[in-house]
Image (cartoon, rainbow, N blue to C red; front, side):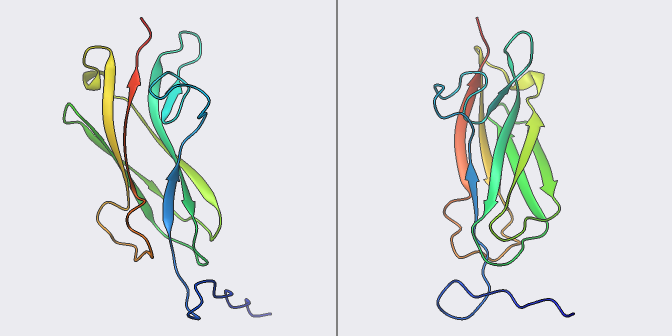
Length: 136
């Protein structure tokens, strides 16, 4: 059988994509290992990865989805998610470069679809700033 058409959800009868970012563990203070965008390393608790969950709030799939991670010290890393189905979410993460740490913190900017290759209904929810701290 032929695939069923995607049910329009925007009231205009057309397909749409809206990518947005989510973070983990909001109950832990921002910047602390294991909170928000900071993934802690087992054993010593140091944040080793910056992570984000990218959710497709649209009604059709998005492919490919590029996520960029720019650290305040100049390092730039990207990760590509091959496809995110409508209503689904997938994680993206990169290792924090050793040179990104300054005074016990690694400040960063995350951008979903930084080159605007994917036409979205809301481009304003694709950018995030935060930091990770190293334990004393």
